Length: 300
Image (tube, rainbow, N blue to C red; front, side, top):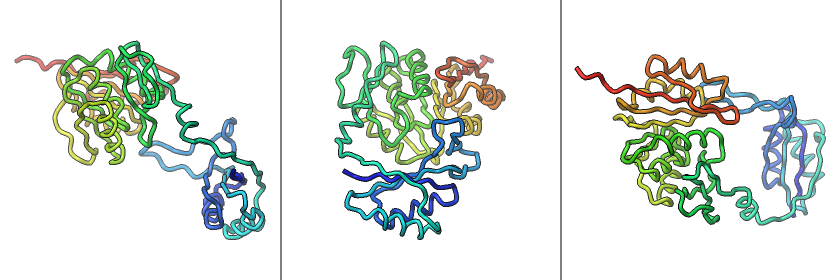
């Protein structure tokens, strides 16, 4: 059993209070939006290329303590260290000990992408042994198959991968799209990500699925062209990457982009217009998949 203490704080004091609580007995501390789930909820994390947002005006500092902690002393000392005259308003809840591994696993079931393709956590039996079953557990890198943008890209791969085609997955995260392409019959598959840890995760996931990927961090120059290029990132990075990604599509090749909200689609289409013509290929829960084709080179 542990004790969870939830304190109210503003954006100017939340971080200082969080640090002070850790220094005065808290086992862990997190900060979230006290207005979450209401009309006043404030998005915290912007996209690359945008100025970072400040902490929430109405923040909630959640600290976990052992049950034998002198809470009154710990809270008073931490509040004073954070420059507060009094302890902020707070509530206390008991947190029962649980099998956290079992609880986490229970939240992830197999995901049907199409009749042909499933995403299956390693602790589950496959619902359809005759389908292509990607073994993928939730982890630090983005991409478990549950997000609409990932699903949109996976659906595209199931229709656009022919045996032996070369594939580029730019912003590969967990490697789910690259692994799916390989399992669907692609030839050489390359995955690129800005995060070295994501590249390591993708390599582990590829090994678990018995496929071979060529993986690299985006700081390394990317050469060559590919018959299929897919990128599931965010709108601003996709716009900035337009020259690079369009140049990687081979003549006669195809491009698919996701991580784009419906309201952002025209901006992305405009960013790629000088290089390749995009269209909305599919939508799901407010997200879109943009698709484009590079014509075969004219024969002189």
